[in-house]
Length: 243
Image 1: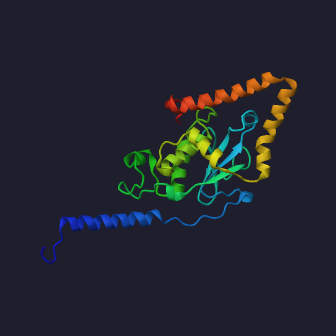
Image 2: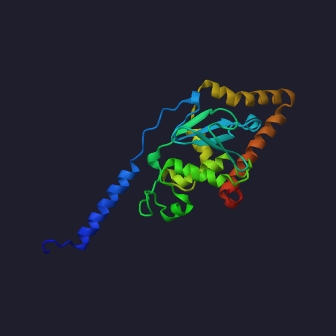
Image 3: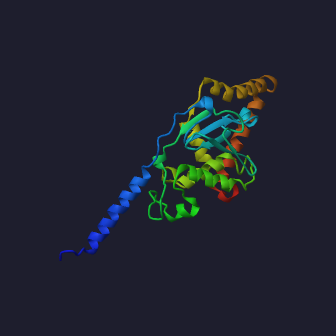
């Protein structure tokens, strides 16, 4: 090869190295997060969960969930065209789970995706930071009608995780969001456990005392029908629960 000339392979290789360097550097420009502080209701990059009045008294696995900004501020879809900011609408957090930002896809451009979805992720609404993704979901849900059975706080969190492409997935929905926080989340303290299960225990005991075994059958049927509804709507009739 003549002096001063570069082959196509050299140029392409240099371009690939530069691209890898720039995207790698971009992906690791994540500033440290503050510590989780339940007393101030600050949960940086966390999912948070609290029981719902009445509903959780009958089915304690059902609750209200939110997602937090990098500074720990809580966001939760709490009513039609309303995203609550800085606290959970139905009481303080009982469980939390901090998510790893390194498992998100923050593409600086169309060629910078670290997930396998690429164009689909961009079309859905990719973001270059954690907070940008959450803000995009806030804008989206400010025009949505809240419904406990079709479009709720879990839908909002799923939308955020899909924009982040968390764990390389864009298949987040009500069911796997609920499973993530319930099975991986940590209780804030022992008071949170009591607050979550005490009403259910009281209802259960009163039902058995005054109604007997038919109450247990009715309670089990209620929980079973809820699960069937959400599972069927999520995986068999996807358009029904999309919002």
